[in-house]
Amino acid sequence: MTTSVLICDDSAFARRQMARSIPDGWDVEMYFAENGKEAIAFIKEGKGDVMFLDLNMPVMDGYQTMHVVKEHDLPTLVIVVSGDVQPEAHKKMLALGAIAFIGKPVDNQKLCDILRQYGIYAGEPSAQERQENFEVIESHSHTAELDAYREMANVAMGRAGEQLAKLLGEFIQLPIPNVNLITRNELHMAISDVKNRDSISAVSHGFIGGGINGEALVLFDDANFVNMGKLLKYSQKSLITEFELEVLMDISNILVAACLNALSEQLNVRFSHNHPIILGRHCDIDQVLANNSERWDKILAIEIAYAINSQDIQFDLLLLFPGHAMELVYEKLIKTSH
Image (cartoon, rainbow, N blue to C red):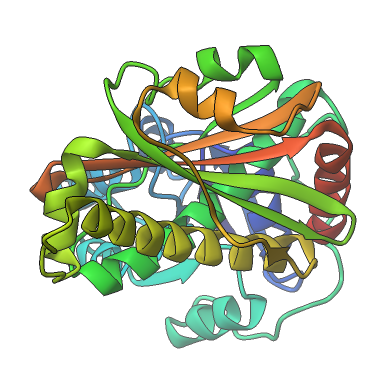
């Protein structure tokens, strides 16, 4: 009997990866939705016996989608597939009725174990590539490239969010990453969540591996230092400068290390990173960028705006790749997704 499988993710790259993870021996008819609103319509048409659901999406995210599924008792088995792997995200979605939660990128063995556990599929993972029912995606269009970078960032930011959530005991609000291919002069305009803040502090971590180099910038709103220090259970030192520096360095080390580990896994590259460098303290974004010595003509800029809503804390991570590294990143993403 054919099972209708619905893959709901705002990223075409992620939808294609998920489709490739479907066991080849499973008799399915696949459908694709870009957000929860589209997914609900498919389910109501009987095109979603099993739904693989992302969390961070525009229009209607995964949490909102599950609320609708639960409220209307819609006929679908939901398996969450998300880059946000925080324990709180797991608990929320399982409480809403999802049968399982899988982190990105998908572990095929874990997927098959879940399908067998619920009597959905009885076979084994298959190395054979499923050819039919894939969405048609242009091999190297500008849109496809940005989408691949965004999905890469989605997984990386989720890993970093998980580490922070465990350390701080708070749920980290994760955004849809802002991804731009720009010139250096356009970088300020591209940083939408930072440019309107009056005073920030910033630290830079350079990294390199497998011919790919880049830079990770952590931008911290000065108004957040006290609250973040309390979450970290640091005693406020007599020297406020020393206290703020400790908070900034510890948070940036956690964020960058987790992100680079996730990037390493996705690109099959081992990254090493330099000792962090303070780019600015209590200054505006223009001063931070002016203090950054790198001058690349073309840049892949990925902006991730983290938030801890319960504590009114916001901070940002910027991942910057120069043009030549950007091309290598895309090649490796495409290679590892096949």
